[in-house]
Image 1 (tube, rainbow, N blue to C red):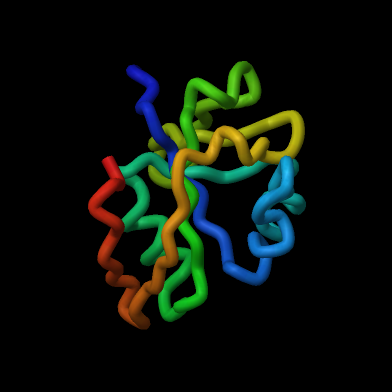
Image 2: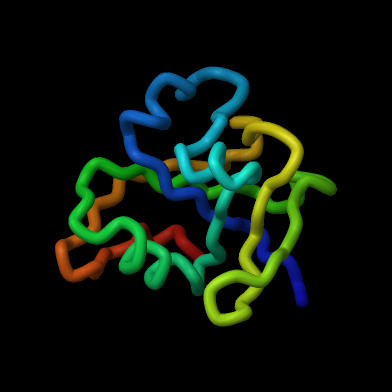
Length: 118
């Protein structure tokens, strides 16, 4: 499997805002509970948003450079056996974030992703 240039972190604005401009982001409550940070590839984003964020309007999408995560980036089987990117070993260093964008997901789970998602 070839590692994509970017992987994506979905967060609520309220969870991410205190970290904005700082050195790190600890992630969402599910990340703390599971002991690693969950990410999605561009192809996985629509289904992740539909399953876990339907009806939420105050989200932020972080585009993270995979290469900047080093050995902490691990690809592990998840939904249906698909390999999902997870960050082990600490918070996300925000200098790995290439860009961020606000995001809203309709009640039916549909969402228009930023054009830069690839």
